[in-house]
Length: 347
Image 1 (tube, rainbow, N blue to C red):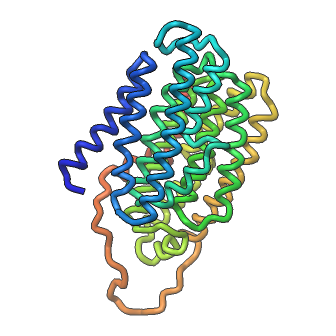
Image 2 (cartoon, rainbow, N blue to C red):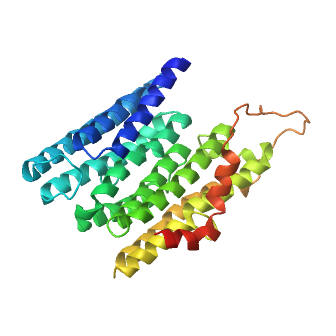
Image 3 (cartoon, rainbow, N blue to C red):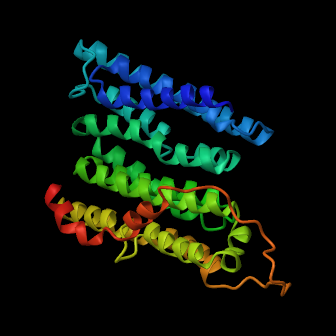
């Protein structure tokens, strides 16, 4: 893709998300979503092959359906309330339809089927945008309408998402699919806390974006898309192998790493709201995610791939990609736990 075209497309994606973030008018929010959706498709199809075409078509169809449902919810809300402003949604039908539309855009279960397929069909650099930046706009709308969302609906979506996100990734060997299922599970955690403490959702989103960005950057630097190609890392660059280990454990939510903060705070907040079964269920299903992160960790850092040659020459080329933001991202993705008291005061 030529640089001027790339700049125009990326600026449209950013502008679409910004319009959604800063609008208080439903029509402008809908327009922002449409701009974002139409501009992301050329980014998904950077490598023009049948897989990328198929992935982009699947993405377009699901997002278009979600946009249609969103407009339906907005119109029902308009008929009942008489205004276009984002505020309390008086009609439960409008609230339910809008929540389901945003759940489709986020890839919450049972509307999650497109996420692994689309992520697998596109390059790593497009996948990172799909699983991080594209989550911001729908979550910001959910944040704004959180007082009028049906809690039972959202908790059901969250519980099934956490379960699907853990279960689906168990038998995967493709790294992009594993990260897609990880994304579904993380979205489930965010949906669970949305009604009770929306600020915690923002904290969870920020930490999730940092961890996912760091993981994708390491995979891009390594040119890895499967567990097998990841297992060659130890011979080639031991430092990157140990960084992948730290990031995977952080994604799994193990203390004393950053990924533990949102899980700890969400479980604490849910128990404060007299919910015992839901946080227990979520903590148990988080073990499924931890299992497949541990599998990746084992393949990367804990096994030596047999090297057949004893030559002094490098048998694999060094990566020429410059990952400028990688060091601060890795620090933020693993070492934020001491800030937890300050973050809990902010909530």
